[in-house]
Length: 244
Image (cartoon, rainbow, N blue to C red):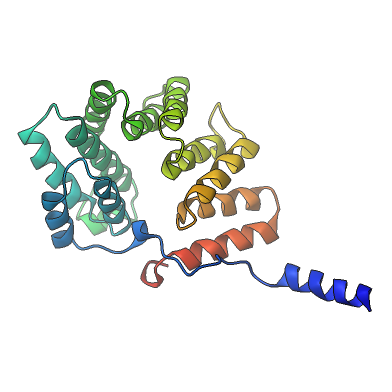
């Protein structure tokens, strides 16, 4: 009887999909309109952590052009401010990346990539990191830029690691490390390390959907299909229905 009960419990464990204990939605994935982007950026303090969330929502709603325009207006008023540089630089980086995707160009009314944003991102992110050396966000974003676009992978990775030390509870920075370690063309490629960083990001912020998407991909590469499916399920459960 005990063996039968154990078998039933094991069967239930392996066939029942895992899901977060609480119903949550990752606010970074919530859709946002151009008018709301403009209003929020103008009225929120430039140093508010909510600015990053607005920018990430603009990325997922493909209205980065509006975010970049608004942050450029703020930067024009105060070009030495580390926050205006960080947000203008990050919006330029994200918009540049989107503009390189042929599938996304029509959403922005583009026929070619916005290569003019490349030097803007490089300059602003560097200024933010230099003028605010204790800002974990500035250090992490500039480090990622150097790793991804600046052909300075070692320095970039080092800056992201330094950012973790400055803000050990920042889940986005751990997710950035996970992304770097999971890149097969990276000189820091290590799926074990990537998994550890992404799992830590999830522990810090259970509502953060992005690390689950990366974990699903890593487990798929490793032929760990069951775990990959579970991570994909969790990602979907955290995502607003209208962005799936």
